[in-house]
Image 1: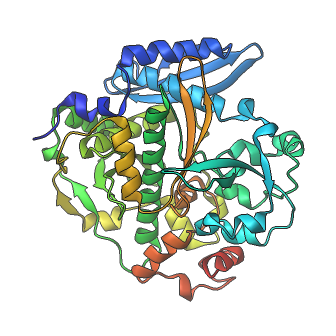
Image 2: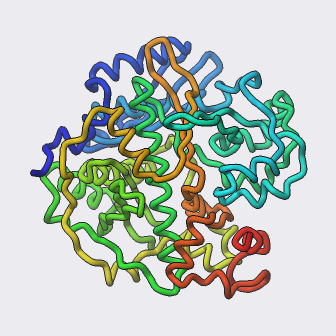
Length: 440
């Protein structure tokens, strides 16, 4: 049987009711000595998006956005702002870091990362790393701070790098940094589930890009029939179409991992780039809800004067490499013509408690996953980061970053008769360093 509205809006992935979560995130801001400024960006819509800015004595220190029903979106914005604050420069503590030679990092589990060849040939005796614990126990893993902290690679972070004793050059590595796998929740379990789902979501999106634009044969897309959406999801779908002014395509992009992942997408035009929202959950309807409401959030943020994220990516840096530029532009118009309509998948059983969901997701990964608790506040709110070595982060190409797929993405591309072998430095495809990465 289909789940009701409460199920697909994610109550099964939350440890406490929304009202209690609101109380705790307010307590978190107060404990950090910060004041929260909240704005309903959707101006009364439902679903909508809210923005939260955290202000310290000297001014703004972090911001975030939330999506969904109004109260859900307001609370979500507060949690994202707290997450960004705790995982940003304010949370930097050199005493928690360990220095590891980049070449040594490339020889361990991180050899499955797309940036591993860059690490292997990088000079420098010590890269700042944090210790991560394996899900299910096992040896700890040193993970470079830069992988989860874009701020650490910026010019303005020279001071923190000196304090860490980090003598590495991040000029090229900075293209591979993102906060994917970071999350905050009212407790550790809630945060870990959302972090794991986000890592899987970004991997699935990356694999779609690889198969759609780096293979000779376009994939057959699974297009969710909007007539099969329950009322609440149909309303979110209609809101997304109204705001974007474009046809919205809801795609099932679930990867071989098997955790349901959805993409809500509008194609680029001559006047604007593509828009998208994505979501992952053991409950397919909730994955669809997250995707549709993220598309709503993205569209509202574009027109707002203080978005939580930077302006849309400039793809100029990819212009010399048509294959990567096509990935960055993300135009699925052609593959959508041959898409296969499918009904919204139904969950076979109600999801269990948070810890059971975590165990299920980790088992479905089929590969080691690692976790780190960034900080736990007195009110219980906890920020975490999760890394699953080998899961793709090639979706960074849509931000204009000159990146290439890692081993997992390349395997998917080769399976689709990819175009990598025909490209050489100086030809139409990939830049010289990308060729080296794809042949390592």
